[in-house]
Image (cartoon, rainbow, N blue to C red; front, side, top):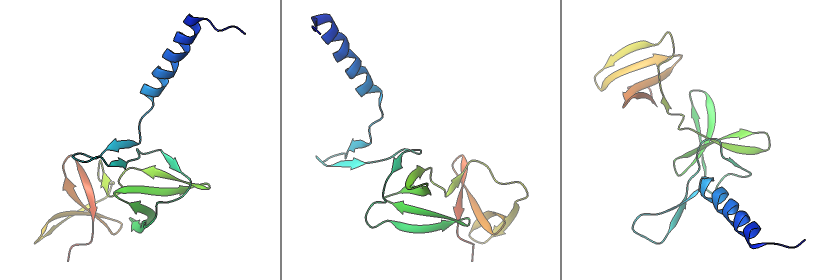
Length: 125
C-alpha cells in the first residue's frame, strides 16, 4: 500500500488528538524536576504500591498510599474517592454536641462537617 502525505498528516493528527484527550497520571512536582504519579477514582492497578497502609473505615477495608485509596476488585485494585468524606449524612443520624465540637453519628460511625461535606472521624472522647 502506498502512503500519501495527506494520509500521514491525518494519522499524525489522530494520534495527537488521542494523546491529548487521555488523562495523564503523571504530574510535575512543583518546584523540582520530580514527577509524582496520581490516580483518579476508577483507575485500576494490578498491585498495590510498596509500603501501603490498611485502613478500616466505617467497616470497609481500604488500602492507602500517599493519600490514594484502593479497594480490591477481581484480581486488581481500583482507585476510589477518599472514603473519609461523604456528601451527605445517612438517614437516621443523630447529632452529638461534645466539648470538641458537633458530631453526627450513625451505626457507630462519626462525622464532622468539613467544607461542603462531612468527614468520617474517630469517636469523640
